[in-house]
Length: 57
Length: 324
Image (cartoon, rainbow over all chains, first blue to last red; front, top):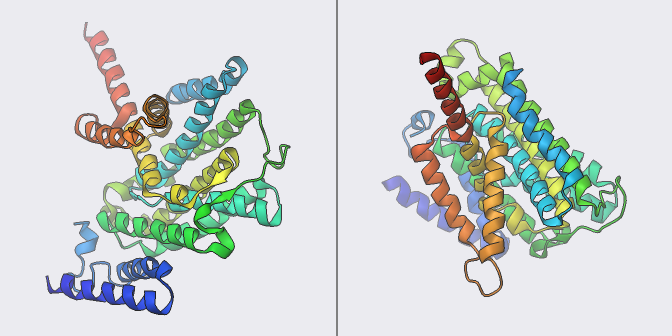
C-alpha cells in the first residue's frame, strides 16, 4: 500500500518535471517509459514481493 | 493432408472471388478480411502458440505502416522496400521488447505491451518534424506494381492473399514442427518446459519477432492500400484488441482460426458501419460495443473459438455415426 503511494508521487513528479523541462507533449512518454523501465528492472514493482510476477498474479 | 483442406478451400475461394465478383465494395471487404486475418494470424503466433498475450501489437502494425509511408514520401523508394524495412525494424523492436519483457507473465506482459504501443503513439503523433505529427501521412498514388499504385482491387485481393498464405504457412509450421511443439509446451507450463531443456526464453523472443515482422508487413500493405496513415488509428489499442479478438473468436493456437475470426469480425464491422455509421446516425462506434459482447460470449460459451467449436461438432457427428 505504501508502494502505491510512493509510486504515485514518483509518477506525478516525473510527469510534471518532464513537462517543465522537455515539453508538455512528451510527459506521457516519460511516465510510460518509467513504467516499462521498472517492469524490466524489477518486474514485481518497486516494493512488490519478488517472484510474484513469475506466477502471473 | 486432411487437416489443411478447409484452409485450401478458404484461400481458394478468396483467390477465385475476384474472377467472378466485380462489386468494388465486396472486393474491398475481401482485401480487408485478408489483411486483418493475416494480422490476427501474426498475433496468433505470439498470443496463441507462444501464449504471450499482447495488447500492443498495433505498435508493430503502425511501425510497418509508417516505415512504408515515410520511405515512399520522403525518399521515394518502392513501398515493397518499405515493407521489408518495416518488417525488419519491427522484428528488431520485437526482439528488444521480447527480451526485456521475458520475465513478465500474464497481466504484467499485457501492460508492458500496451505501454509500449502508447509510447509509439505519442512519438508518432508528436514528432512533427519526422512523422508529420497528428495530421498523418497521405501516401501518394504512383501507378505501377513496383510502386504499389494499383487501382484495380482484384490485384489487391491477390497481394493480400499472398500475405495471408504466408502467415498461414508460418502457423502450419508451428502446428507440425518440433519448434512448434516446444512453443506450446512453454505456453502450457513454462517451468515444466524449462526443466525438460526447452529453450523457453529464446523461443518466446523468436515468436514475438516473427509475429512483429508479419504484423508490420500487414501494416505496410494496409497503408499502401488505404493511402493514409493516421497515428491515432495505427497505434491505437482498439486495433490491438481487434487482432486479439479475431484470433480468440477464430480459435487460439489454430492455423485457420484467425482468418475465420477476422472474416466474421470484419464483415460484421463493415455491415454495422454501413448500416448505422452514416452522418447523423449517432451509432458510429456501435461495432466497438459488439466487439465487447462478442468477446464475452466467446470466452463464456465457446472458449476454443470457432475452429474448436466446429471440429467438436464434426467429431460428435462422426462418433454418433459409428455408434449407430
